[in-house]
Image (cartoon, rainbow, N blue to C red; front, top):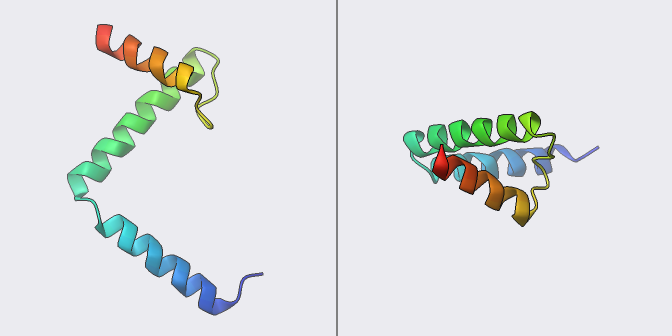
Length: 65
């Protein structure tokens, strides 16, 4: 188990990372991630780790949609 101090540092780092992006940006990222993961499931692909080929085909598919 991690020492309590390390948990506090992790939480603080997560808060800084969250604050580094505007709320609208975070919501857009969440929406885009949901679209990507659903697309991967639909096509029988793994979303993480995403290969460059999967990302390229996804981007191409989205551009023509």
